[in-house]
Length: 55
Image 1 (tube, one colour):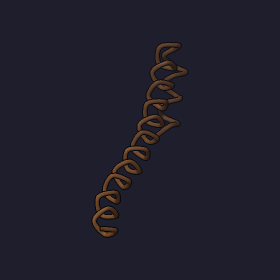
Image 2 (cartoon, one colour):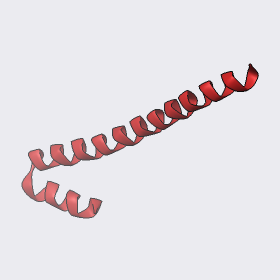
Image 3 (cartoon, helix red, strand yellow):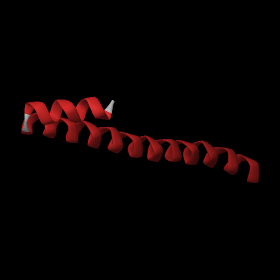
């Protein structure tokens, strides 16, 4: 898939290259944001359980 995108970028110039860069950046950023969201949700789920178990 990346090979096709890079071929497109080289044949269509700077705008295609910019699009490819931004597309890959957004995918990378979304992946990291999703990891943080999952960790935060795990933490929020554990807290009420731990409080009720201790009391």
